Structures are given as structure tokens and as C-alpha cells.
Image (cartoon, rainbow, N blue to C red; front, side):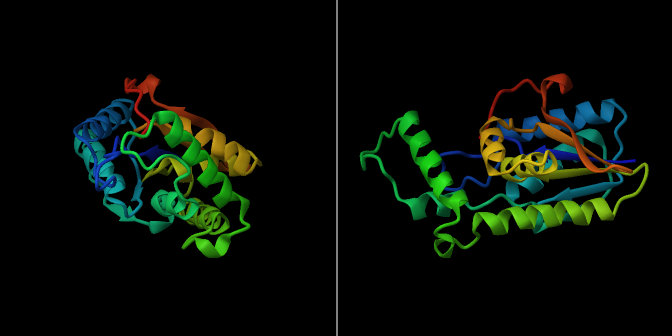
Length: 218
């Protein structure tokens, strides 16, 4: 049996000009995660990260803290979907005033996500939802086929891919993925096993058990 840990990146820079940069908290979360996993005796045979800076930065912090020397492979299949374009394509339904409330932001996000997932306007997106899910499934299949019994892979990615993998492996679809996505904590992980029964999800959104009870989600 082989094991895959799907790690969400540490806290990024929500609301800043460049979201794709880890905050100080994000770097610390990566280090806490790496230390906790190494303390439990986890020694990865494969380390993989998406190409986004928040993925690579979390991998660097975790590996430095854990003392893992395995080279980190980069696979764009694990990248997050483009939430900036998704929101822009839908258009801001709220006020143009500067201080938009959390509730207004949430309604905008939900409406934009629903439009993207529906697939009726795929030509408006650089990556339609169906293309995103196919990309993530391909990345998982590539990794699962490239590891064998006893191997341990750690993947540094985002909440979107992790949520889709969970929904996909549970035989569910966009509804479940969309429910899971908002609750994936920074530096949490999902655990997937690859064995005689195929590829199976065995845990999701673990962080409290590793002492990373940080409660950040962006």
C-alpha cells in the first residue's frame, strides 16, 4: 500500500495585491506541519508541489522544519483554479463602495462559483470547471501510478484540488466539492491510500491532531 498526503498551503495574502505569497503565519504553519509529520516518523519518498508560490513556499517551510531532503517535484496539475477570473467573469453584484462586507463577498463568491460549475458559459473561462476537475484527476492518477507499496508522497496544493479529490474518490460531484472547499484549513491535509482496492480517501482536513490548531482558511 502507498500513501498520499494532500497538504493545503499555509495562509496566503488574502486581500493583498498578490494573494500568491505566504504570510508569516503561512510559513509558520508549514513549519508546524513538517515538524509534526516528521515527529510521527513520516519520511516521504516523493514530494510534489503545484507551481504556485504559496505551494512551493509551504513545501520549503515544511521540508526545512522536517529535515526532508527529497527533491520537490513541480506539477502544475495541482494548481488551484483561477478564482480571480471566476469572480471577474461573473461580475461584482454588490456595491462599488470600498468597504464590502463579508456577507457581500460570500454572496459574490457563491454566485460566481455556481456559474462556473454549471458549465453553461464555459467559453467565458480560460479553464472551465470540467477542465479543472479533469486536470486534478489526471495529476492524482499520474502520482498514484508512479508510486508503489511502501511509498509515501506529500503533495503541496490548494483547497480546490483537495476538495475535488475528496468528492471524486467518494463518488460524488461538484455539490460535495463546493461544500468542502470553504472548510479546508491552511496547512491541513487529506490522506489517500493506493492499494488493492484502488485509490481511496481515508481522512480529510486533518490539522488539530498534528498540533496545528490555527483555524485559518485563506
